[in-house]
Length: 599
Ligand code: ZN
Ligand code: ZN
Image (cartoon, rainbow, N blue to C red; front, side, top):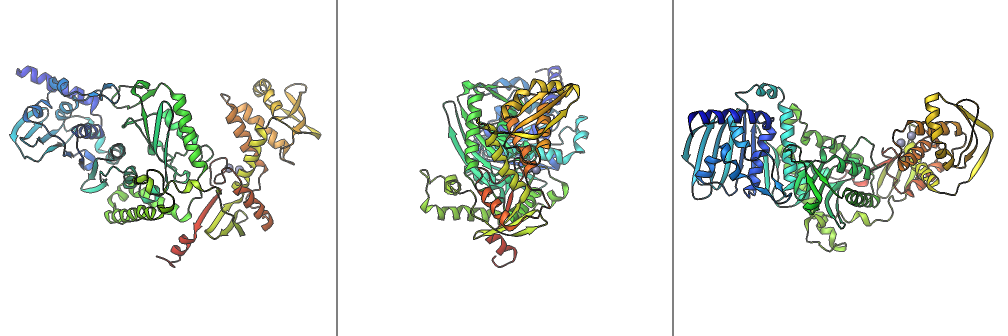
């Protein structure tokens, strides 16, 4: 190749680098994916200053001979290195193979590789090969990328944002560790270990290594299939939900993808178990015939389209709802605090302080507790073994809880705190119940039933209610009179922009009729696109709130008994219709631990 051609290539690489190597994460991603393609069983990612200063990816894969190693940095050789991704029937990631030369053009790269027969060490700086020497024979490849972006203006932008960079990288490594539980991933930054999985092919173990023990204990295994799709993995109890969607990990045919529609379907399946702005932790694997998916080829989006979305949607909906319906979902009050503490330690949104304080010893202790937990489950499983009980995940006892028929054991009220929280007990422990939320849940299920029940009992009002509306609202309301009539209201138009209601459905809360009607009409006028299920939910939730005892209502013990009894008969006694908890618990064990009666 002539000198001019080489110069052109350096320039082309730099331009490409601006497009594909936008972040340190992209460099890590490229190197890690190469390592996975090289059949590695162990991949180390070592960063200095979030990767700005140094990124080193070391694997124990098949390695390269000298010729391939040199070609890896040549743009012209990319076709040779490109692979067909048979899982998706597409060329794997768009810029694959072009990334290495691009990375090398904006940094200082040392590649050490060996196929077990020849060891090669190549040093490249600013896109120019400085040396090619014989290297160590240890099989595998290590790529050291130093001073990324050193010769571009991009660098400055990132120096300001070390922790954002780190959070992107660790989020990506988390997803890879979840995608490949059979590969050991070690991630360090400035020599601190951020993730260390064991490659033992136990998904639950990876979940533990990423999210910690308290989250792991609150994961439920799912596994269902229909004609087109097979879905399996773990979903969390609603109580450990997060306000960002990043904890929903989707893997299609083993590949990590992003897909907002599936995230929405999952969130919808937790309907009324979670506030609308909260998301569960989910690791969902979807297996599907590649014919049914269409891959968006943009290399950084990792998005795909499913051609039979409706069957996938109903499969996910039913699977998740069914699981949640069979669980006891009372958040453990003492656990809650552990979860929060955990979060600051291992969250991907590192703050400098908690990151510096990352404590390996805590991890170690936790690991032992995890092993103990799985061991405990092992011991318990003697009487309840599922068919594939040799399976690690099965043996952990996640199947056990769902067999319980009674969702809440009978609780006995002890008293009322602040006129708001009922304290109750039973042989398992102590419970704190929010009386409004509990009552709201009971009423919600009652109104839901009434609203979806076609036979309506109506009552005439002694004094008709008349309501007046501004023009724009009245226009919408008039188009939707049928909704009110379907619910059992009988109404007349009266004069200008006014309706008179003489007859109401019997379930409308007594003494609160006018407020309730106003609320229902507000919902009718408010909604942008109409959805019957949503409408019925909103009416039931709103009327339930109106009809429920408020905070600071000092109710009698008798009423508490009735309330608790009716709560435990609910389909979902654990959350109010807005997704907030109705009840939390301190188990007997928690109490003993808190008072140091047991260690
Ligand atoms: Zn309320
Ligand atoms: Zn509520």
